[in-house]
Length: 393
Image (tube, rainbow, N blue to C red):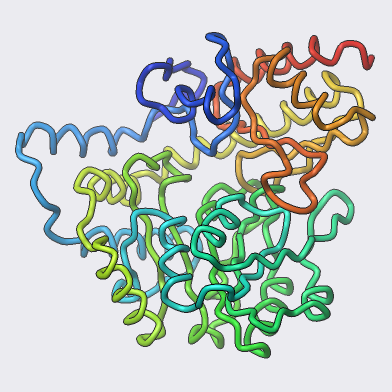
């Protein structure tokens, strides 16, 4: 079956956070604004997802969800099929998503004022959930070499905080789209083992990897540290199912799982979203063909945007994405102040984006653009950006 990712779907006034919250999130109320901020795709869901949801709607009764066994098995089958790692379904604990899982992990395995290690710039929700739980973030700035980020383990070793308890590891990395290599993951795993740190591997973008790169689950690279490893997964990015609120933690350590499950129960989060579970299981069981066609489309969007932004905004440079659909653009070469850059993007081009500073140290001169949309919107955004920065030419 051929899927049409170019078909524009008008998501305005559909309860879409991406398109209907730009006023609050991006300070952008223009009726013709283009949403390129939050990590949410604009494509129609896989047919199997729609069919499964419609079948549930036709049943006309939508009570409590009875079991997550089928979903857990589908998730493990998917990880085995796509990434060569098959965890035991009993290792999984269901959560409403990755960020909520991170909060539960913080509550279960650390105390207020403990320090949580993050390689920055990093997904801004890391900082938000750390601070919301009265923990402290310990940023370890990454090094950019030849247009790619790398973790600075040497700097982490030199600055290791006395109350360091947990590492939040984004794999693949957001922002910047790095797909970590085996030696890099191995070095981080060894550091965690040597310093008695819990390693939390957020692998939500693991399916969105482009040609020439391969995602390696941390658990498959470093099985010897499984006693101190929790992997977080979700189909929400892969199939755009964030509205279903389904995610999972995976750990083979029974003590870690017992403590985490106790925190889940204490937070009254052990009852699952019926529609989310149905949609997620359908996607994981029947979504391969859809994803296999989506990836080349996203890769073409990546290349099209990277070339286009360099022409539209002299001095701007998009980091080459190995994964994710989140372009990470450095505007330092424009010579403009950050406030001027954001004013031109937001008010002149009317494009809703994610400002770099929210991702922490290293993001000061950057802006993140969501490319998981139809080519039409990317071309329109590039045309507007060209006009907004026309004086630089």
